[in-house]
Length: 359
Image (cartoon, rainbow, N blue to C red; front, side):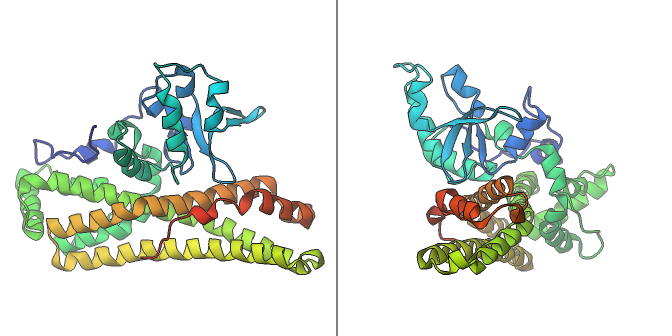
């Protein structure tokens, strides 16, 4: 299958990641398509090697119970038409030519997250061929949006090579500019300085920078996902606290235990993900004290090893908070019984499958 590691460009002054930053979206991709690519809980089946045409137009989505469902249609007025993967034979015709599509969709539905970084790991593990360059990358608007989060990872690189003489960059693209100076002598000097720092040949720098930008863009993305959920999680936990004060709930010990478990689980996920992302920030800064190509690849392997766990945890939180916010945009506008009913029927389910995140 095609690998999602990338060969160095034959010209050491140019990196594939530099062009990836301005690479156009996949042919025919709409704004909605870009949003799907940037999502934790949506997998467009058009990128999967399926045979059934109608199925390729569908999406896998996570419902409030964290079940992977096949979404056949979605719209403001029509809602979301979802079926379980096991029900596909009732909608599509399958024979010896496309029977494997059913099993493939079932397998993909069980993944804990559909973010592009988790998918790279899982697709490699499953032996599913997907063009990582075209489909398993964040959209250009999202890359630009993540630029402030990248500063924590680009600053140590620039500081290590240039000391305090260069302004901290927010965008990995700016790092390439340091090695593409119009003055050939300045560019050569910058390349040699980094090569000496990393103990690698000058020709290996483009590959190193692309890997560096990609692995830390994943951490910036996860940090953004965490930040986007913090206010909603706080509101939800406040809702749980309000529910526990209700007389009918206070008298129901099993229900109180369920609410406590849900509270503890969400707090635990947020705490663990925050600690993991902070660990990588600190280790990145320390890594540059004695930097080499090998030490970076050790860090790269560690980050990739956490991607499916962190992606799965953040997918769960995002889906749960999306569901709660849609159902109760104003928690004071409905009685506690409806909230309890939704918690018992949907929100409590699926969280037990979140992998252990302790670092």
